[in-house]
Each structure stands twice: as C-alpha cells, then as structure tokens.
Length: 566
Image (cartoon, rainbow, N blue to C red; front, side, top):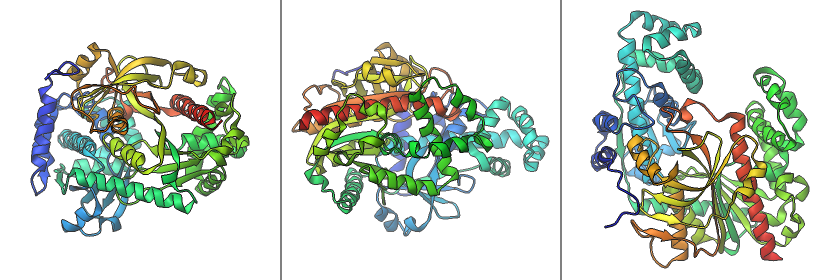
C-alpha cells in the first residue's frame, strides 16, 4: 500500500500505543507503572527529560494543568463512555460524586471524595491524551519524592511551607527557581499540599477502561445533540428546519463580538483594572496602539472581572439573549458547551464594529439561519459532534474551525491558514479549499504574523510526538501540529460522499458545496524544548490572534448569509 506521506519510522510511539491498548483490554484495572518504560522510550517533545533522574518541571506543569485538582488523593481512574457504564461496573451513580475540573482540559470528571476519579471519555482521543498525561505526572511526582527524601533540609523547607524558600527547593530539585515559580503558579493553592504529599509518598496510579465501543461513542454524541435540540425548542427554535453555519471555537469570542456587554460595562472594567492585582494591566492598556486592540483588551479583562464579580455573569447572559445568542450547557457525557446564534435577532447597534464594517446587517433580519458554535472538542470527538450536527439540522451552509496548534516555523500568537491536512487517525491526506485568505485576518491582527498556504498534521495526542516524528513531516512541508482538523474533514467527506471516509488516501474535498474554513493560532513551539502551554499562558497578547480569527469567521458568515438571502 502506498502511503500518502513518508513513514515516520517511529516504532517507539507505535509500541507505546499498542502497549496501553493491549493492557486496557483487561477487565481489571491496570497499573500506570507498567507504561513508564514505553512512555520514556518515545522521547516525547513534551517530556524531554523523561529518562533523566532530574525533575522535568515543564512536563509536570503540563500534566497537572490537565488533571483534576485531587491528584494528591487520587489512586485510581475509571473511564467510561456513558453513565450506564459506571452503574453496570458497580460504581453507582458517579454523577452524584463531586464534580472536579482540570484547568487545561474539558472532560466530565467526578471524584468520590476518597481516592477514585471517574472520567467520561468522548472518543479514543481522550484515551490517547489521558494515559500519557497520567504516566508523565506519576513519573515526575515520584522523581521529586526520590530527590526530596534524600535531603532532610529540603523536607524541612517544604514542611514549613516557606514561600521565601522556593530557591532552596529549586536547588534541592536541581531545577531553575523560575521553574518552581511556574509550578507554584500552575498549582496555586495546591502547591504546598502537593509538595507535602510528594514528600510523604510515591504514587501508584491505576486505570480501568469500562467500555470503549464505537457504538457508545455515537450514543454519547447523540445524547449531546438531543440535549441541544431540546434546548433550542425551549427558545422557540426548531433546529431540524434551519440551515446552520457550524463553528468550532471557544465560548467567549462570538459572544463578546455580538452581545456588546463589555462596552456596556467599560467603565466598571477600567475601574476594576486600576485596583488590586489588576493594577499592573494599566500600563498595558495605555500602550495599546488602536481602538480595535482596546476592544480586545476589554474582552480579556471581562473574564478577570467576572471571576471577582460573579453577578455580572447573569447580566451578560441577559445581554446575550437580547442579541439572539443562547448558551446550551452540556449534560451527562460530552462536556462540550454549545451556543446558538439566531442571525435574524442580532442588534446591529451592539455588534463589534469590526464584524459589521461594509455590511448591511439589517438585511439579516430576513435570515432563517443559525450559527451553532461549540467549544473546541478534543481529537476524534470533533468527528462525532460535526456528524451529529450534519444529521440533525436542515442544511450545513459552512463549517469553520478556529483552534490552537503547535507551529514548527512560527511564533506563539501567530495565525496559520492551511489547505492540506494529513490525519494520523485515518492516514488520509485531505486537500481542500480554505475559504479564509490572509486579507480576511491581517487587518485585525496587531501583534502576530499570518502564515498562509501551510500544511497541517493531525496528531493522535500531544505527548505522542517527538523530534523524529516532527522532522519527517517538517521535511514534507508540514508546519502545523494539531488534533482536530483531520476528524473534522473526515466528517465533511461523509457529508458530501455516499460512503464512509477512506483510509490512507489522498482525498480531494474541493467538491464540498458549503464553506470549509480553518484558522489555527500558535500556542506551542515544540522545536523549543519544553516550551509549551505548560510553560505559561498566552496572556493578553494571545487573544490578538483569537479575535482576529473570530472576526474573520463572523464576517465570512455575514457575507455568505447576506448573499444567500438577497
């Protein structure tokens, strides 16, 4: 069989994947310890010091941010696809357990209050994501335990929880003080709790997969869509009779662009900025070069303001619904919020001026179309969700994706436009006409750079990449690494062809009769060792690329819909 790209020759990654899937066939729990050797052998770009006795703080930070904040208590993880899985296995109604949240991952997760974590998986990608994360976390936790327990001075420092002694902790661990501060920033109130637990004991995590059938993945996605359809009915919308523009992005960008809420409370936001821990942002505000970037800054500030003023969240919901924007919270399985934008209900006076410039927005009052925006899913869940939307609505008018990616040739905050995607799930290489071009985005991009005509690689997991793997694809011109483009394009294929998507073929999607648009913004530079989202957040300037992308998507939808109804 002829491959669509050169063989990576990366047997270590393939061996790792085969190992944990073969172990998961067991009806009993498996030990994470059994995976450490094959995990270390992959030489993952996110775990560059896995084989070394010194602590890899970047890998620990990355893992900790993607696990629930109960890891100092957890001993076992149980994975299921639907709630019935847990009941049949004797765990009872895990929905009644405490709901816990990982800062860097959206998976429905519950904790029994003692030592067991129950996690809902939406696709195989959750397995490929969670197992390496748990393995890296256990490896680095136990390294720190071994290192610290060799020094009574270090134990004394940690047990006293002296903030001024972080440099001593760094010295004992053999890492930079900045690394320890990053770990403290990531763990926040749990920092000293975790360190004390690391002194106290090694961890020996176990994991049990209750079910992993394709039928149950589809069943969970169907329940997600059923919940969305019923919510639409409550708002007087029959989604089965409406054409839809599908967007995969985040939960804040489109809301901020259409509701006008940040502008309504601008003075409150600026007053909030000038006090307390936010005072450092004043100089940033004063240095912003134009009004467009100032609008982005208000959107950035709004999230911080709402954390300190929870009542404003309900006020924002009212402003959103007055603008025809409705939120549908996920229930049960898929932890993916959806949002419905009723185009005919938009209030032109409240829209961000950047999305209305050049359009007669009042023409949208004749529209019967909806925008369905979902919170960016993980990996193969993208295929399941877009497939359900395509089956459930009257017609798909456009499919637009805005997501984070790693870049091999750019900088954090840059924007990339791709027209070729190689998918490691299906082994297909997809060719498509990206409806977005540089001139759609550049006018709204202040800090980042735009790279178009790029090629993307859809990887199976963030840890399932190493330098050899990336070099093979880089030589073939693949510069964007991400996890969802391939599954989305597999779903597009099944919307325009009468058969299932193929395997290991070059697939031409130019025949799609609806818009296909993909925008990625760079959040990682894996060729810089350990430089990933575990090393720090994008900050204010990171939303520059986010809103430039969201503006381009909304302008494209306005253009297409006004043309369609005129």
